[in-house]
Amino acid sequence: MESSLEFSNSLGSVSSLPARCRTFKIIVIGDSAVGKTCLTHRLCAGEFPRRVEATIGVDFRERLLDVEGERIKLQMWDTAGQERFRKSMVQHYYRNVHAVLFVYDVTCPASFRSLPAWVEECRQNSLGLDIPRFLVGNKSDLRGPVRAEGQVSREQALKFAEAHGMTLFETSAKSPANSGPKRRGAGEREAAFQQDKVDDIITAVAARLKRLRRPTAVSARAYCDSFKVPTKKMPEKDLWSCTC
Ligand SMILES: Nc1nc2c(ncn2[C@@H]2O[C@H](COP(=O)(O)OP(=O)(O)OP(=O)(O)O)[C@@H](O)[C@H]2O)c(=O)[nH]1
Image (cartoon, rainbow, N blue to C red; front, top):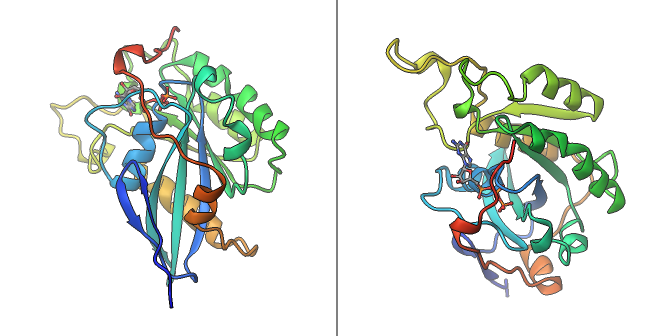
């Protein structure tokens, strides 16, 4: 008899998939308030959450995709950026990782300067350099000529990405799906930046993971059995904000 697995995450109840569906675990890391929760929500649920609170510990969301005829499941682990909410969890979420999304805020250079520390944390938790890494500069909707100073330029980010073998995306978890630069009217704020679509990230991650030959028969039950995922949130007022 085929067993049915159900567990809860921040998007509610998720039913199990047949065993042949490969599941990939992707961790999303970066400073607090760079938009990891909003981004994972947007990547998995297709929308910007109306209300967000600082993540405590770790939360996860999932997205099912068909990639060239294969059904794969991306399980995105949204980790807390604040040290006090993550330290006891670190070793758990670095287990069985298939890809990493490093997130910074393009309007917050401090969050970009923290990236080496996140890379180092990966190293300390034995994440091999063969694990695909993606660099995501979020909040590109806030980028503009007026505030060009004190922002992280695409050139800086590209340099970092190249040095660390990462694929770079600059995007906005907030801007609507169809708000690419080409669709902006003359009266609207002109895009002074190159913005990648949020879905481009999912497509790139999925395509890269699909090519992995390693068997990845990791089920959600395996994660839940070894580690109870806390979904508690803290009030929005306690969110850290960028101090740059
Ligand atoms: N303008 C804009 N705001 C965003 C974007 N993404 C997130 N935000 C805002 O940034 C704030 C922090 O977002 P979160 O997703 O909670 O950040 P986080 O990195 O998960 O924070 P921690 O849980 O503390 O690690 C919230 O007020 C969001 O509404 C974006 O693309 N554009």
